[in-house]
Length: 181
Image (spheres, helix red, strand yellow):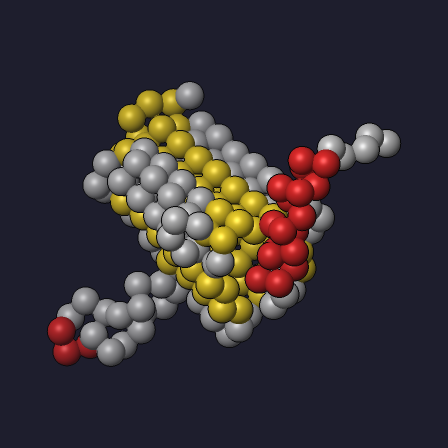
């Protein structure tokens, strides 16, 4: 067994303590969770977090909101950068080894209907799934009902309305597959 260095203890100690505090409402938190900064976490449903989860909420607050019937499932070795907003009224699943860039938005519900006379009507939710090893670039938006395949990359500023196949690079508004990797 290796002994951790003093600098790693000093650097990670507060992040471990913040993880314990900010993730206290989670249903499950894996080992080695780290939180830097002050995220806003509102959990009325299920929040399942894997091992080696890292959140940086320093420059802008990370928001995780889980509704009463919602489930936010986060795999192992997931990194969420500052300014992200993730809302799960039904289900948002983030696979293992995913990297979420700064100011990314993921919502499994639009929270209002389009016709003016129905703006107070909340439409049905549809799950969002990020398979393993997905990278979402800065300010990407992932909307309800989308599955992004394993090993894919979403370009900065993209709006993902439709599924993205595994090992693809997708970008644009709306996001389209540019090439396979």
